[in-house]
Length: 180
Image (cartoon, rainbow, N blue to C red; front, side, top):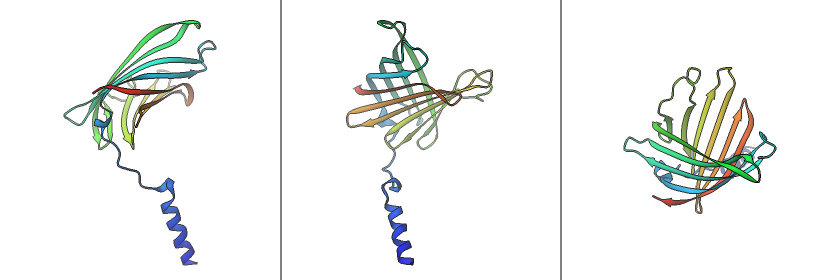
């Protein structure tokens, strides 16, 4: 019986889901200018359930261990469905280190006392995660999650926006490095 338990323990330890992951990437691996496109899905509008987006992302690390990120998104989700209006949305954020692989957005305060989202970032494996939480005046909440994963072909993007735990919008796309 003890031998069987030892085999089972070794099997569970070596099972692929329990394997030790390769070291998480440093933020410097994500640096540069990335460009691409994404498809957004939403049930908010019958006419714009699937829309295309043009995306560019710029990541720059700083000497203090933090980083800044700017992403521009050309959205096409209003107007005539056959000729939608384009709207450029730009988001800029700075992050300061909390501990290795984890950063806090500069300007974060108590999410119940501010109108801007409370945000943080972390790197796990080959993916830069940025998460934000916003609490509305009426107590409802919104979360947004961005996953930017590096691969041999560039960067994949997964975005999810939830309001009170319900998915409102998601987007998936691919970007390639356009500049350092």
